Length: 182
Image 1 (cartoon, one colour):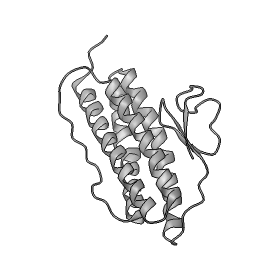
Image 2 (cartoon, rainbow, N blue to C red; image 1 turned 30 degrees about the vertical axis):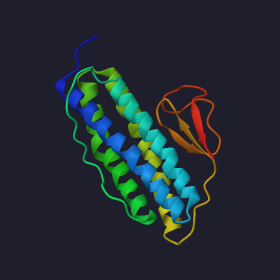
Image 3 (spheres, rainbow, N blue to C red; image 1 turned 180 degrees about the vertical axis):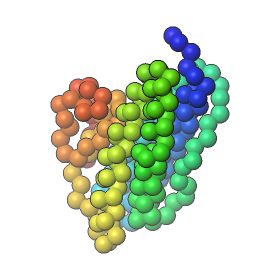
């Protein structure tokens, strides 16, 4: 196996760190939403938390087996459900507009296909997550719990969809790998 560039190693570590923090943060936000009477938002945070865990796992699996440090510029703190949804939107937007496009471009330029794949999968999934958070926030701002159907998360790439799982994941092209959040 070809040596991975130092820059891509750093990007994989930082992406792992950021996604790990998002996973934990969304679990906590899920508890807050549940306690505030927003069970559907709690389930949304739970589903996306699982997707972030998938992203973190993918980044770690594509990292060379060596020690290193990671720095993640991630939203911090816990607020009420509206605040937490906004933090989710901000985090996902950063990953969509800044982090993953840069990481993906570098990995492609360096001809590091495995890293490029995990960055691309995460980037595509994050677009859906940001949209879901934005839609939920509009309803929660009115004091209501959004009507959210079953959520399906691909256990390979983190693609998240409301309703029925697609036969084939549109991001990673795998079959029958969705976990349901009812």
